[in-house]
Each structure stands twice: as structure tokens, then as C-alpha cells.
Length: 358
Image (tube, rainbow, N blue to C red):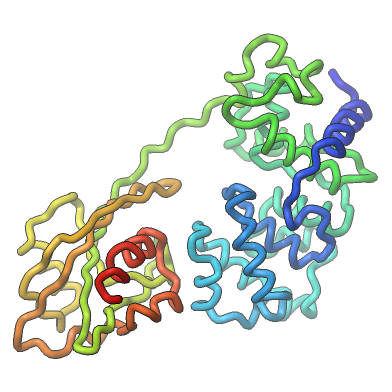
């Protein structure tokens, strides 16, 4: 088995020869480190870059984040997905302001208590910001260790997660923990990738057991595929006499919580009859008097555990119905950009609504 010293030397030599240009690498500002790590949870670095830059520009510090309105927060996060991360980020900022005098906590055990922060994120922040000797184990690091040492353990149970954290900790350079963690992440992202890894240029190919036994594709152990829950959302496009569109804010503790949407009902099947759908809208919005519906578009979006199929309709009101519905906000198409919507609605508005209302 490779020694920790040799592991560190091979890793650092590779890292210095293969720099990665990302705006948060080498950052020492704890707030910026924290924001970047939250954004990087379950999201590729290349996707995060423009969101990170804009967020830091408009929300420069913890106090600004703690005071940020929910609507503005969702606007800045729109398109990045996993919106609960943004809500947790603001809640943690308010905690820091109220209980830590607006200063980011100094110790790992304090950092991990913040909302939205687990072992990996706490270790990353502690090592990057304070040079504390904690190994940060994310999917990239887990993949490297599983392949290199032919570990059949998955990363699903708490016991196995702790096993990989202990293994990474045994290899960590306590004098340069931030450099070590960043190098491991970079190696997993650019060389020891999930599919088609570049084993020939890996600094550890002489020591990687799965490489030498021709079984790299077997590691890490395959996760059990999660069956995606299918959901059918039916959105209705309604305009008042001034051309403003009806929108509403999602309040349920469900996907897209706090984001805005067009009026919507959910059904258990893909294509309900128009009359059935109209009744569902009337039941949900009692003062909405629909005459008919016309299907104009459809699209779908796969999330981590759900497959959303969306259908968009023009809504025609009864002639005697002058007011659409008190439950809605009414927004001119040019002002939709001031509200945060799920991406599936953003695309629809861009392709259909804007073209029809210009």
C-alpha cells in the first residue's frame, strides 16, 4: 500500500502541473469559500461559475446575505437548482449574524452545526479557510479511493461514509490540508472521472489496484438506481385586461418551494380530459371561471428523484368573468425577470410568452 508521504508527493506534483482555473480556488475569504462550497453541492463547477460570480457581486458578505429578501435570493439562485441550498444558506447567515457576531465560526464542530452543512462541506471550509486538518470526502474523493484500493464499500451508509473519511484522513497532509483537499477534488473531476477515466495520465496509476487488474469500471460499487416518481403538472396561461400574466408563489414544502409559477394543478395521469382539468382548476381556485382550455406546449424535466412532465394551456374565461382570481399576482411579461421561476417555466416564457407579447 502506498505510504501517506508518497501519496501526498504524487498528488501535489500532479496538482502543481495541472492548475484548474476556478474563481474560488485559492480564496481565503471564509464567506466566499462557504458560498462556493454550497453552490458546488451536487452541481458541476463549470455550471456554478457564473452564478457564483454574480452572487458574490450582489451579496458581498454575511450581513448582506442575512438581510437579503427571499425573492432576490431565489432570483440569484434561479437555474442552479436544489433551491433548499439557498434557503439554508440564508438561514445559516442569520444564525452567524445573531450568534457569532457576523463572523464565520472558527471551529469544525461549530461550522458543521450551521444549516445546510455536512461533514464534507465543513471539512472543505475548515481546511480552505483555517488550514484545519480535516479531509473533505465528496463523490470525487470517494471514487478515487474506491478505485485505488479496490474498496467494495459504497458511500451510502453512515458506517461506509465514515470509513472513507478515515481513509482519506490517514492520507491527508496535516500541514497542507486545503491544498490536499483541492488537489483530490481536481483529480476526481478531471482525471478519475465517473466515466472514461484518464488512467494513463493519473499520478497514481502505478499504485491503483483496479487499474492494474482491469476493473476500474467496477469501482466504485454501482448505486441502486432510484425509480423516478412521475408527476404531471398542468399550467395555465391567463392574462388580465392590461396584458399582465397571472402567477403565484409555491408555498408547499415540496420542490420549487418559494419559487413562482403559472397557476397549476397536478394530476395523477398524463392526459386528463379538458372538462376534468377545468374542474380541477375551479376546485383549486374557486373564483376562477374557466370557459375552456387550449393545450399550447409541453416539456419535461428530470430532477434527482422526480420526473416532471409539464403541460401549458391557454385559459379562456367566461365572458361575464371580469376578474381572474384574487389568489394571483399579475405581472407584465417584461417584468417576469424580477421573479424566480423553475427552469421549466423560464424556458416556456422565453420561447412562447415573450414571442406572443412583444
